Length: 360
Image (cartoon, rainbow, N blue to C red; front, side, top):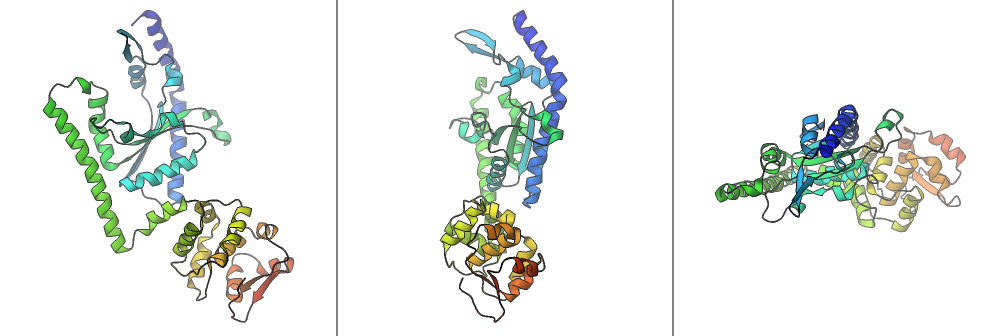
């Protein structure tokens, strides 16, 4: 290695030593955002961890050489900007089907700050004859308005999402295969056994996932993951119907008019099932399920949005139209908001105390 390249690496290492703590804080910041979201959605993961690359690891990466046209040169001409994984977060899940849920969470949390060219599923990047280093990788750039963390803005962080078996494979074989020289291994039987083991682990992962889904379906536990997948869907007639049926355990009737429901949701800026779910009051829904009354999808959506922000509800609806609610719903809503005061302010809100079914 020529002197100016050695000097460049030396200066780079000094820079990293002075900034390693910031990268450690960046990893913690990204990790906390993901874990807090996972907790809020009541998801289960196997494990998670963070790290800032060690100085030794950074040094080895910075001095890596590549050959081109018979000449060797440093792989990274500007390692400070080209190396993407100074900060890292790893999320380990139990099942392959969990990967999609966590991936969707990451894409929601960092949707405008994912470096697509540096992100992807490592399985998709492998050739058909390559050993499987399995995991999903994202590289995100931190961009936050939280004052205590604004010094982290612009820092990149790698996020890895793996199953337990994928992580076991990576922990055992990653350094041996990818930081060594796998291509130069001459013992074909070892290469074949390594490939077979990788493929076997992938098959075992898929088989476990399939068997778990079977047991869960028989035990009535499938709804949690199905529900999480549903939350990520755009609001359509079918997806909204499925959501309403799910949260009310099937105690919901068909639409009067999906178009009117859609217009109301759009007036609130709600385009996804998750955005609607974020407006929903869990305690209200649980109480609503106890009532022995008929509820259409239209009404359920209106109840959710009315309770979430009744002022916005009336500002976005036709003031000349009467909104009639059953007295049981009135009494239930009154547990959460002052219905008497709301009725006095909005004369088009009527109470049905005759036990009749109102088609509104």
